[in-house]
Amino acid sequence: MKHRKVLFLALVVFYASSMMFNLKGGDAYYNTDDNIDAGVVLQAITRYSSYMYGAFESAFLALNPAVDDIIWLEISNPSQWVTAIASPSYSIDIIWGGVQGNFDVVADAGYLVPIENQTLTNYINTNVTNDIEGVQTIRTNESGSILWVGSCLSSYGFLVNHDSLTSNNLSLPQTWEDLASPEYFLDSDQFALGMANAPESISSTYIYHSILQNYGWESGWNLITRMAGNAEIHDYTSAVRDSLIAGEHAIGLTIDSFGYQAEFMNPSCEYIIPTGGSLITVEPIAVASSASGEERVQAEAFIDFVLSPEGQALWLDNVFDRIPVVEDAFSLSLQINGYERQDLYEDYIKLHNITGITFDFDLARSVYDIVTFYFEGALTLSSQELHYAWEELVTTYRNAELTENEFNYISSLMSKPKISLQEALNLQIEYLDDPTIRGSLNTDFSQYAKANYLSVPYWISGNDIFLFNSPSSGAVIGGTIRVSASAKASNISHVRFILTNNSGYSSLLANITSGFGIIEFWWTTNTVSDGEYILHMNVSRLGGFYNSTSITIFVDNTPGGITSSSVLPTSSSDTTSLNPTEDTTKPTDSITLGFLGISTMVTCFLTLPLIHMKRKEKR
Image (cartoon, rainbow, N blue to C red):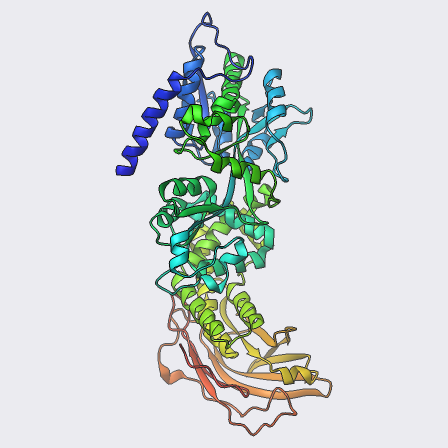
């Protein structure tokens, strides 16, 4: 409440001061002829809050007696923008705020009209830099007329609290990859990072999309999952900002404006634009196709004011903390706001010189909801299991019990997404047709991720077979087996697993992963029904197939799973080495694995002979 009172007082002072200055735009961009009959009322769609658009409206109306008022419709969803523009219940003249991809949706649907005022067009082409490091800031139609123009710049990066970095002995991060490093894991109760839940934060969701596009679908999810292993996930990006201000985290993912606000509130905070990987966007303003006559003229007059140096300087107020698209605004900040903004000017220069991410807004829209659901299911709803797995993996790595290659490979197994990019595209279409599938998707994604996270200790041990139940795919049998370096040196090329019961068999050929010596294998319910099975593992090399091991396992697809230890399977035959030239007289250890009824996952137990490997003690 105290913060809101301060904000309210700041706005009162701001509005009063704006009335004292003789704010002007270009030479003849908006009409100030007192003889024009008053009475024009504009209607505008915006994603901004009233405190933001109110400041611009107040200053504009003070300069332009031709406009009585602006009626604002706060609408976030761009598809609803089109509905409002097309509706006879409204007469929309202006659209303002949000990422450029939203404006492309409206433009492609034919609901934007080009700017007609040639003086304004010339001003835009002279003062607004188009194509900032590959980022489009002006969109034109086929004839070159301007359909929308960016009104301010935004970047997406991370906020650091230097005091928290120092107290936790953490280095200053510079890239997205840094945030995924095991260095930034503290423990399961204290987190170096703060992130926002994708469904609740549009700005954070665009950060996640930019990572997925820049690094690729699987590698991007690996990076995001490792970040989440280091992080506490908050509901909103504003909560991440507040946690950095309070020193609760050392690093937080955020949009630039929240970063600048944190810098103002706590001098220990610093907003960082990631090296070689920042998403840069503009927040456009445009004339709606329903604008006509004097309303269209005055809509362009408002656009002119927003883009004038005086209008652009309003972005530099500490209440807004946005980077203008017109450089001349910075020289007016002292006059308009009462202080200079050298910090934002330095970032303005940086954004015009760094390499930004080439971002496909069409692709982001095509998987937007599915990405948010996957993030929520696999990371937010599964955070406890993720932190358990990440702590186990990081601790083992820090103890030098895993090589860097092994650490990275197991983290890739842990974070491997359940769906491919193409499957996400298909699910997005399915979701738009039937939004009720969201709940089942969240559950499915969460159960899949939890099974992966709970498998990490056994992947670390090097050998395991696991069973779990998923509502969408039924029982799954799978696991990994680590192959020794001496075995690889013996020309072993691949391993064949054969699952048999009284009704037949199915087999899967699993190649040894080059450089890691880890084999993955799995079956799904298409070939596995309830019952008792024998799993045979055969090793292939130049001399033929070598029977390595066989074990008995039980499959139960019943939701809720097996709960009694009386159904533990019996250990099967002894094993020979994966490398037939090794001594096979060494004793064989065994481990018992179990998943104890997570949601609808089946609880399963089995005994697996290990091949010349001692299981590490659980930490």
